Length: 67
Image (cartoon, rainbow, N blue to C red; front, top):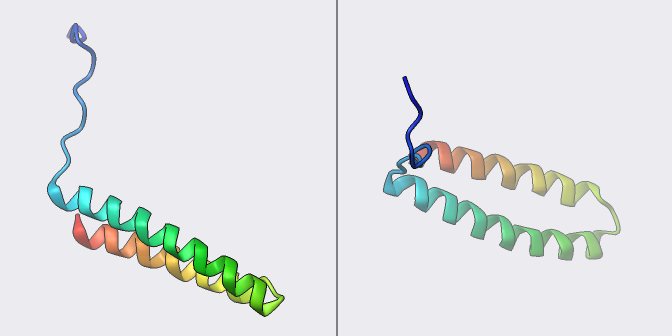
């Protein structure tokens, strides 16, 4: 089979995927600002690290559920 002249076709995304990606990016950016504040107030990395893990897990779970 010969490759297509225009190159590969881009993957087709469902509307839920776009919403999940946009929501994850916005939520993670907001969480990054909160993590900076927590780090400055707590004088320890542990609370910020725990919240970072929780935010990442929530983002993955949300994107999985919206697929």
